[in-house]
Length: 178
Image (cartoon, rainbow, N blue to C red):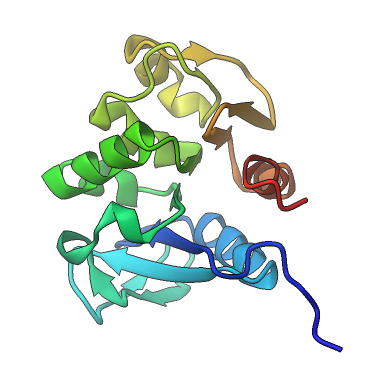
């Protein structure tokens, strides 16, 4: 008997790059796949191996520049130091703006919130994130709360790796896959 998985047929984009936070990329990726989704790792270069802050490798399957937001149901923005570099990419910013305009999942954890901040999509959104970017979030017009997870419409935010179970539950809640 075949098991029906709640996210079968859905596709999700995960940004990767040098010094990503290992758990914040891999935990949601594997959780989405466990629920039947397809995931794509996209970096500034295709087929490049990027090392996480703790040395775990990820290989970008495609370039960020080749991504079309219409092909995905949502995006995961992991933390680490990677977001500080990726938020300088016009394509990353336009993708996030397109996901927002379409009301698709935008999930950011820890320093991953830097990317939606730079995309200008957090104004009036209830969020959390690493305490290190609290001022950035507030200055971007977001409504800050210190909590393990915040879900506001299609936005899901968490603070740090220890919040990952709540973060993934929030993602599944938005996707109605709980």
